[in-house]
Figure (tube, chains in turn green, orange):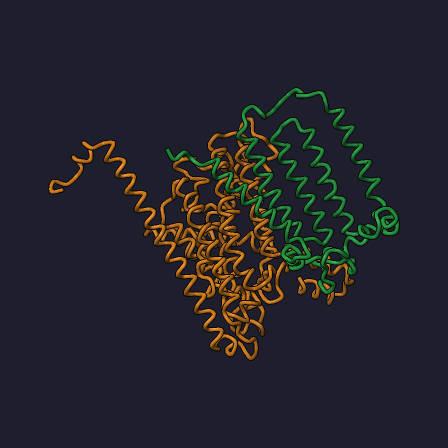
Length: 197
Length: 409
């Protein structure tokens, strides 16, 4: 395998993601777990950058680190006696570890043929193999210089936006998600509201 | 980036090496320049603050005291770094680094002149928002890691404040993105070269952008994070020496970067006369605009007293957020409805034809109207609130009210 800057960066981000994820579950201090979760999410966003998906990378940082992980931290800080637990709280960790390893093996078996397009076509039909072809792509767009491979197709922000609002794109799920979020927002206000009386 | 690589190539290095080295050199150069900038802006700020408060300010080291920050830095470098007992060491030490890094990373997408930009990301504006949310983590790590109740209270306030003020900031950031039709910072600046500055299309967005960014940085009048009369120094209470200095550095740099980003997004960035012939002029124009906005923020900081925390949240959620949403809708609607001027001829033909003038005039007027109208609503709401409070007090303490009222009442 040829060692390029991309390879080195990939392994750095992979270690960040997996190591962070591992520390989330084995750290004794819940607050440290939340911080490791952020590290793991940051590694994921680095992987998105390497895949020439800058939009996803930025959204990953903004939504997962900037909002969700912060809320997790906040919840932990407001919860009493959640810190510095010395003894293990439950005895199910061997089973959990076994399930995690099993899931990993299943994922590897399922996903590794994806590298070879023909094998995927044999298993799933050409729909999955041409996954890229289904996304609206802009052949003229040039990479941000992160990936040297020129024939990688780049999904620009404009195309993602168009896909979200066109009828043969994802307009229905998009609108449904918007309504759900608005309802959640109104619900939160109603719950938090002081009584008028 | 191009210039450094080109120079190295001319010096006889291979293409690949020259490109890689060129990137590293320009990153180093850009980061260092912006890191050293606060040494200057701290002096500017102290001098301006002194003038506002009828003092002289630093005047001993160098002409006009301009070198004052250098002995300050040397002093801070020579101080001891103190770890209080029960401090969570690793988060405690990562926090100041994270604060500075998150601010420095923003510089990457600032277009300094035509062709001089760290990296012209296609999602530049989004990158700015994403990176500025990282500093929240630094504050939380400092607040909890310090094992100090004031630091923790400061961290709680920070999370509430930073997350809230991000919302109007994003909604006003959408205005330049929407008008220019791109999130790339360089293209937003290019757009303002072909049309009017976005400030003239949406002055209200400009004002709200600066106000919400002041809340994001946590400077006075929004410095509830470190309100010294309530929290001593907030999340940075336990820090000493360079760790403290790094928080200070991050704050001053962030405050200046507000000016840089507001100038880039709303005031044409590096655009100015003759800039296409001599790109270096762009840096000059950008700094002039940035320092002008920086001066405005200093003016606000030095004039207004600190808000109360509930007033600050109410100001954001009940004023900035609704106004920025309504303003975004109106701007988008007008931009679509008004006739689009033709893009031919030189800059004067483009700016001073009937349609271009009509578009900018109507948009400016309506945007300003939104602001004036919402200010009136804010004023009335405050007066009503005040009246309700005093009515309640009158009811509760009729004797005190009668005694306090003037004789002829």
